[in-house]
Length: 305
Length: 244
Image 1: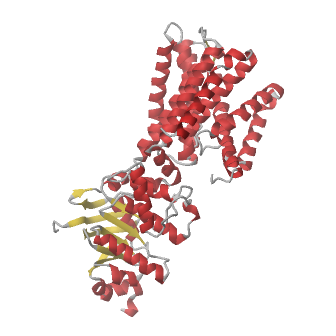
Image 2 (image 1 turned 90 degrees about the horizontal axis):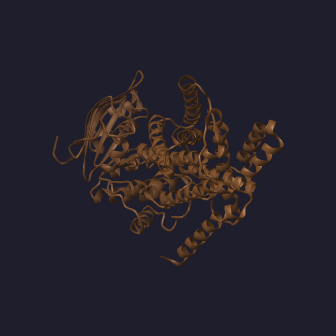
Image 3 (image 1 turned 135 degrees about the vertical axis):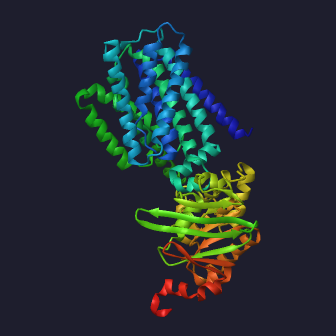
């Protein structure tokens, strides 16, 4: 192992230890902010895992996030927690595979619309089921899982997302995704099984989103379809990833930090105008920094982006 | 058909709406042979290439590579069997480096390669097409001609047994054309079969072992370049009745 790589690994380990210490040092408010940051880090990085290189812009983030939350709401009580997470993992995988098979033949704006519609469809299905079968719209999640444990689980998930991202980027699959994003016809003609590559990584990305939703569920104590499948989450994740820059693995995090803080501030100060302000933030990001913060930083350092 | 044929096409047909773009086309390409696919604009040449490479599905007919049928396979499987191509309108992977462009041709092909050995081969391929030492440049910054070279390097990366070139020589100046002709000839001498769609007559005369001429979706002549270019029906297809 080269010295550079050792230093890199040591740095990453130190960062993880530092982040793991946050619940021991922070007060309740700061910890809740840290949980927000960590959950958006997982979501935005997982989003960019697939949508970054392939340029298939997905608005289905909240579909998977909400499925994870609902798995916990339904199965959480009375079952061991690892088993509940495993169930979320399995259900997320199956849904992602089905959705992937159905949608990844679409391209461009059709894919965007379909994924948005999918999230709404799942929300309506859950609403229909709750109203007609359980006769109550909402569910309570009373689990003995505190904020510190939620934070640590999210941190572990974030480390996993990054590890998977690094593995993919260094692999043939990573190159395949880039080629698909550039030109899918060329991708097929150099021998890439484009459908398989897209479905594999779409599913991987969706599983991380599902697990993030599952881990976050105990925080809410009460969930209903409008909360768990709130489409604003999909848009927020998209803005964060674009702001940070999706052509680098660490890019989305650079967008998560300022955006989470901004959203937190806007929600506290202008709760009634929140959506409008989020929309304006979206426009500014897309117009002003199309390659994201990571792209800006690289240009400033004189490296080709 | 002879056993030595690398590619055998028979009865190939493809319709777009009411237009019969390719109408019962049949010919063959042997290993180590350069076959020119000629014809006026709109005669169906590029569609034939698309049907062979799997970009389009044929309505009827057969395509065989070394005796086994490939016309029902998806494009990526056909590529892995050893057919590589370039496109009429150059298709490089713009924001990727030249090295990654060629690596894409190498990594997923019939002899998929990865790692340090693959990168050494990429650099050798770039040097072969005249782009030596430019591996880290983004493809979008190359001139049109250099993008064509890059596309060829990507196609060659998989060591294809059959190479489809769609007007790859178009737009080259005389000096570049000479180099490009040498390059294509050297590929044939290594044993590849080459099917090229081309309008540059000098190149056709000096390169092609045989020519297939199409007009309005049909094959109207086959033979040596000199013979087909003298054929009355070919002249009529290109120039109209009065000159024939």
